[in-house]
Length: 181
Image (cartoon, rainbow, N blue to C red; front, side, top):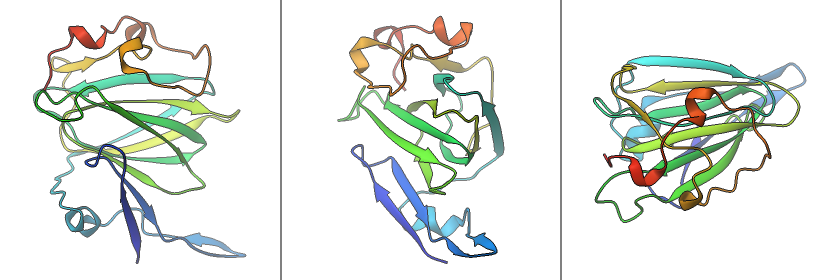
């Protein structure tokens, strides 16, 4: 099966677009194949799969793990999201820069979020969104971190106004307060 990997404005962040084969019965596609990552120079060992469902207007993030850090492969199974990644690697030329992209069940695309990035998304449209992501590190509540989603220094253009945000995410610190990875 074919897939196209496209490096985004931050080149370590990659959009994978699988080839979808469809007819009047439905469609078939390969959702994941390890060689897609290795062909792009990514060596990932996934240890956990996460699945969330969010109502319209929900915003989750911006989250990251420190020890061990997590890389993610994010896919939307239903609905549509605006997905954002922020580079928090201390010595990176794109430190504190972000990239955002729409992911949807219709597109079948997956987004590679490398180690050293904060991640968040908001639900677009009037339907709930189910987001599935493979991660390279186990969740550890003692090493989780985050950045306030509306931090003005990040200049993220979220496409929704007045999102529904958890109390935990509302209390995340600004970007100047975090320790870079």
